[in-house]
Image (cartoon, rainbow, N blue to C red; front, side, top):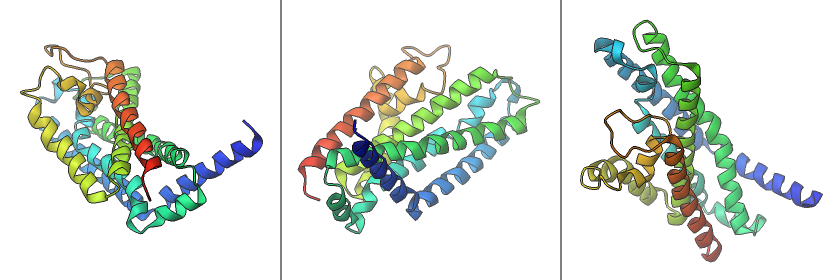
Length: 252
């Protein structure tokens, strides 16, 4: 790769990062997600302390909010790709960067760069709170297990964000994307698990669950963390590929 090409890639990536970090809704979403996580962590920890805390793991309590926490990262992904269509800024972007597939791919990379550290901090904050409040009563966990679990949670939230961004790029409208994704994650998927038990592990959210939460001893057909990661990554790559194909063929 030539020096000019490398510089061009760096400039485009810098531009995409700049667009994301200067978007107020991005920061409002992240701050709101962080606060929500702490509130939920406090609620779950309080419930754990009032119950049979001695039989519970700090990780289980600290990550109990993940099911709700993912909503913030779904919104983050949608905002990252839909925000430019709201005011017509997408035309300026495509005029400046005419290589559509490359530009969208770089946006996903920029989104991942922002999401990974934020997801780790938010997930770790819940575990840290649970540890501080329950260190004398809950089951002790090894540091290696904690790190692997937090890495898995970070990976799940990052892949969920990228998957949401891909669907946002396909729909190009914030509200429909929110309705579809939040409806799937919080209504359709939970309700369908009972009568689709044979294939539920192949749903992106269910597969992603195994990235950070080990299955119970009596659970049948449970996935390993690697299998869950592979399935969710495959879903994400499929939607990103479809989004890039449509992005290159459609009008702005």
